[in-house]
Image 1 (cartoon, rainbow, N blue to C red):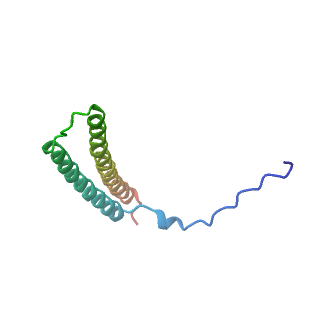
Image 2 (cartoon, rainbow, N blue to C red; image 1 turned 90 degrees about the horizontal axis):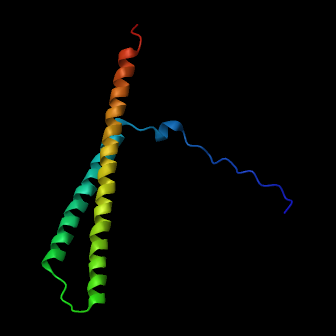
Length: 113
């Protein structure tokens, strides 16, 4: 109980250039994320259509409530994934635009020799 608290050791740091976002990386990530979002959109639509075309045929109220809850959860989870990937695609695209504008301003304001 009286031992001093050990100090955390610093993790080896990576070069800063390895983590710098580039326009190409942003656009590639945005395209990949948008592709996944579109795929999940198609999956969400297909699942919803399948559930709509196959109604629940039971007279048991508990079974009916459970099946409705499961169907809602399945569609909701896939739709959540679609939303996350869609927003990620938009964010990476906006970052690419911001990087392009920043570089353009920096090249315009650089002194010409």
